[in-house]
Length: 207
Image (cartoon, rainbow, N blue to C red; front, side, top):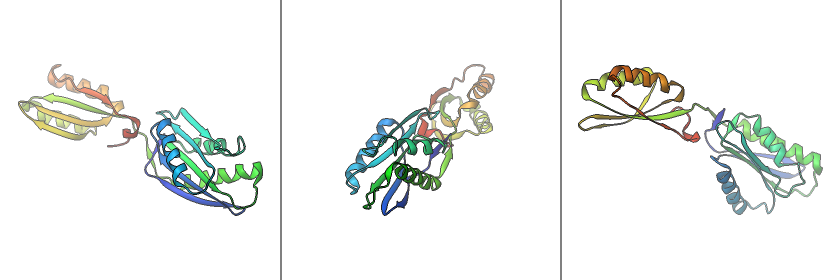
């Protein structure tokens, strides 16, 4: 799975009708619909803004709307194109400005499909790498050794605090969690107990 890096936009035309497609990061169906509502009050097309979204770690939360276009001619084709992108936590919208010529159901399907394809071609995708944040307290004699172990697992040190002990906060790939805990347990004879926090999906990329 992939996550969208940033908003992108593409413009297409069909029989003088203008189609403006946008691709947004959206972490939930609620956020996707909120963005859509904002567009409805922002764009001056006076009519349809079709949308489709995919969210969730496996991309299994999906939705779409024809927003007044004939049933099945806009939202569903948009979603089908979006499903083929491998993206999750993403919203794809297409606004239509009527050009004076009716497109018919087949023409609408082709136009909305084309708009979705065009904007997805501009998308910059980030590979989804599930991450966790770990926090641990270590004594000063073990500090350097613990840091070396963290580096072995390609951890990124996010914060350090030096008091009577050293508090380390780091980000790492989730798949290495058990191996890291075993190494720390061996080093500290069971006294180093890292706290593990799973990051939300939008943070699940290399930190």
